[in-house]
Amino acid sequence: SFGQATFLGYGEMRLGSTIDEAKAGWGGELKGAPTEGTTCHYLYPTWAKQPSDLAFMMEEGKFVRYAVGTTAEAACGGGKIGMTAEELKKLYGDALQSVPHKYVEGGQYLSVDAAAEAPSKLVFETDAKGTVTRWRVGWLPQANYVEGCS
Image 1 (spheres, rainbow, N blue to C red):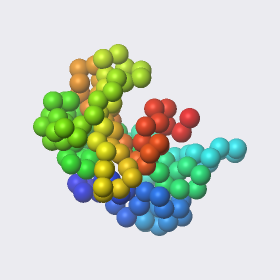
Image 2: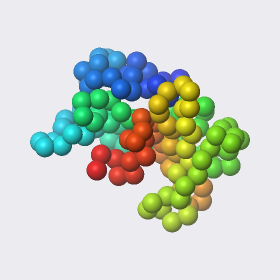
Image 3: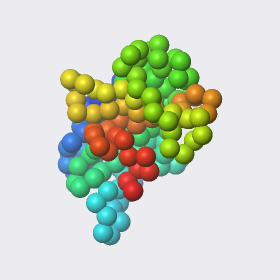
Image 4: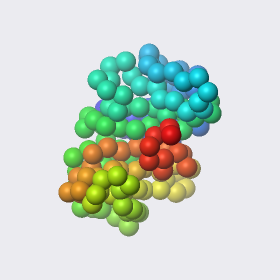
């Protein structure tokens, strides 16, 4: 459903809110629980076929990032999985920053800073062909975490 994803959060779930506030904002059941001794974990909808479809990162008691791995959802500004880096450049213009992907040879992280709107950032990951494979929105520094929680 278009319009759920914003720089401020996902639907009624606001980045920076407590875990309980985020769960209340979701309004349904979420799977996932912290592992003993860690300060970061993911929650995800019960309908998600795999956690990577839609994952909400909780760190130190706060909702700090969400990641999308399904074509059903569009990012703030209209970017989607399956688009090319060129299409993203048309959508976001000079706001789009590029750095090489850490693990995918020829891949990139293409990001857009929320600037005045929120202390957050939108990051698209592309494969070697320049096609978007997934994207995420989060506060900094969490938006830049390459390996998720670790």
